[in-house]
Each structure stands twice: as structure tokens, then as C-alpha cells.
Amino acid sequence: MKLVEPQVQVLPLQRFVPLIGDDAGKVLLEQAGRARELLAGTTVWNINTTAAGGGVAEMLQTLLGYSRGAGVDTRWVVMQGDPEFFRMTKRMHNFFHGSPGDGGALGEAERAHFEEVAAMNGQELAAVVRPGDVVLVHDPQPAGLVPLLKARGASVVWRSHIGIDATNEWTDAAWSFVRPYVEQADVCVFSRREYVPSWLELPVRIIPPSIDPFAVKNAELAPDVVQAILGRVGLVRETDGVPPVFTRLDGSPARVDHVADVVRAGPPPGPEQPLVIQVSRWDRLKDMHGVMMGFADHVDGTSEAHLSLVGPNVSGVTDDPEGAEVLDECISAWQQLPHSARARISLVCLPMHDTEENAAIVNAVQRHAKIVVQKSLAEGFGLTVSEAMWKSRPVVGSAIGGIQDQLDEASGVLLPDPTDLEAFGRAVQGLLDDPAAASAKGEAARQRAIEHFISTRHLVQYVSLFTELTNGNLADS
Image (cartoon, rainbow, N blue to C red; front, side, top):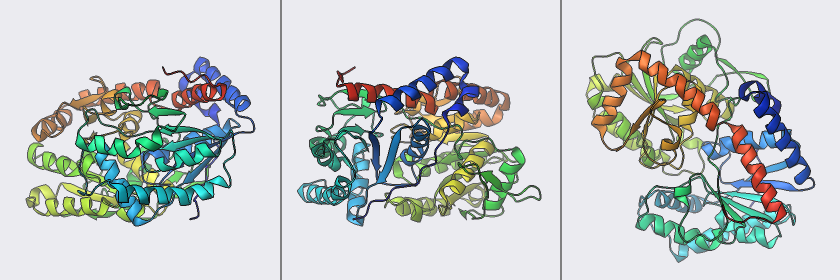
């Protein structure tokens, strides 16, 4: 089973200094020098299960890029698996978020296959991982590798990006399944303290995820380029003007060539019409269906506002076999809506041929939106919130998981009950009716994102963790 190692572009840390200021920039560069000395001769490995289509993959691309720019040898390996493995790990993902998923089990047969896939990947890793290397194993899917990597003499960090505020029988079953592997790590990292299981006796660190403001998904785009990109992919009416171009992570120019698959009744909205968007995977826990119904039933149908539910083309996300099912469910529900609602609600599948092209399209979508929604039913963190905040967009989000850590009253609207579609509709309508208030929330959101949710904070926290790991002083904190 041949492992995949995504290409990672080297990125300069110095680009952050004008954004965070000279004092904070000095601290960042000092920490980079410390990491370079500490990890000389050591490789820091990162292992997950997809190279594209999720927040973890996006974070790895930039965090590793900056680490390499700091002179640290960092590598990223994508674990391979068969369709049954990914069906099982998607079930596990749903369990971790309190949902029964496809209704299947996580029993002994599933454990045997989980360990079989881990062993096949472990054989490949054994050829390159050396004693003393540091390995970050991201999320439950590759957790079976933890004991195999420990046997190689590596220091192993299990990094969990998932979690839920309350436990139930499904979360308990998921934790029982991965516990034998997780307990063999040297330290566990979680996004929120509330996600740490009560039985875990290992050292724990809390490191919230972050966005890279210079990534293709977040880089500045001129308003006319935003319109050109959205017109090209079919999200809004195409107009004459500048070409739909963007700059790749390596600095080279590129153009958006692929179009989106769009389910819509009638022509696309004009560039001047207010657009409400949610950008997510086609995942039941993201509740695209609920967003659609809340908008259709509780946002004034006589206004010019449109809703776009934006997700990836389902063939382009390798570790999410339920995506096509969820998209089909949304299309079926959309078809049952009155024509007036179908004319102002679009289901959009973005092309995944080129991950940077996809990121540029998402960037344009978020920048064009009047309101960004993240009405998840469960959410480990939800970095689409910080992405929108960085772009000065007001956010309506569920008061769950990491969304409530990102948003405050000044920067958006938190929904105490994400299943209350009427309250959701009122929140969206209120921002549509008061553009000045929406703009003020957007400006506050950008400042909050800079202060708390960009890569610099994340990188400094990892340097502290690696220092403790290397020095052998990992007492819990």
C-alpha cells in the first residue's frame, strides 16, 4: 500500500510581521530559531487521511510550509485505505459527533480491518520514520498507527480535531474503539478542553486550529476579480470585465477555468443582489438541509436576497463516502420547495480538479457574501467561521463546539439552538435589514480573527509542545 506525500510549498514567516506588528513578529522569529535548533536532525511527520477537501488538509499545507520556511524538516503523509475502511471511519466520525451515522457497528470485525489497514500503512512508514522523529497523527482515522510508530522509537502526538460538547452512547462507542491506540501516544492535543475524555491520563495540550491569512483561500482579492471568478463558475451572473485570476501559493499567476455544478431554478442572481452562503462539506452534521429550509421558510421571500449552499464536488473528497447521499437528500428537498424559493436558493458543487483553484473560488464566495452561515449540528471547530471573520463578514453560527469560541456578540450572531429554524431566519433577516450593523460586526470579526485565529499563534504553541516533548517534561497542564 503506497503512501501519498502531498507537495508542500516553503513559506516565509516574515510575511506576518506587517500584520501582527514588530514586537509580535520578533517573538515569532525567535520561536522559529528555537525550533530550528531544537529539531535539527529530526523529522516532524504529519499523518492524516486526505490531501484535500477538509480543514485539516488545508491547515497542514500552510503550517508545514511555514515550518519548512523556519528550517524545520516537516513531512506530510496521507494514509491509504480501501472503501470499507473509509465507510467505517466515516461511521466513527459520526459517532464522535453523537450521531449513529449509517447505523453500522464498530465491533471486532471493524477493529480487525482497522488494524489491518494500519499495519499495511505502518509497513511503509517503518521504512522512513526514524527513532527520535516526532509524528503527529491527526484524528481517529489513522489512530491505529500510534502503537506502530511508538515501536519505531518515535515520539507520537495524537492530534484530535473533532469533538462534541456532550457525550452519548455513540460518542462512548467511538472513544472505546480508539482508546487502545490513543492511550499509547506520548501526548494528546485537542482543540477545546471540553473535548478531552474523562478517562484520558496522558498529558494533554489545548491548541485551537487556525487559518493562514496568506493562503489562496484567504489572500486579498480585488472586488472586480471576485465578481469575475463567481461569474465564471456560475454562482452569479457573468459580466464583462477582468479575467478570473488568482495567485498561487508559490506566487505564480493562475486562472479559474472550471465551472461549478449548480442546482438552481432560473438565472443566477446579479452581482448586486445580497448573497447568504454556507460553505461546508456535504455532511449531515453541517445541516445544509436545515439552512435551506430555514431560509426558505423564515427569510423574507420578497427581498432580493439569495442563498447558496456551497460544497465540494462529491467525487473530489476521498475520505467522505456519505457526501453523495447528503447532496442527493438536499437536492430532493430543494425540488419540493415552491418555485419562488427554488429561484433564490442554489446548491453549488465546486470543482476539485485543482485544490488552489477551489480555494480561490471559496475565497471569492466568502468575500462576496453579505452574510456567512455555519449552522452546524455538531462541530469540532469550524474554521469556515474564522475564514469569514478574516474577510470582515458577519457570521451567523451555532453556539456549539469551536464556533462559540470564535464568534462573540460583537462579531456575529450565535444560535443557542441550531435546530430552531425560525430563530435562524430572524438572525439572517436582521442582518440583511441592517447593513450598517452587519458591516460593524464584520469589522469586529476581522480584528478578532487577527488576534486569536491566525497561524502565528498556532505555530508558537507547537514550538512549546515540541520543546516539552524533546526535553521530556510533558507534565499535564
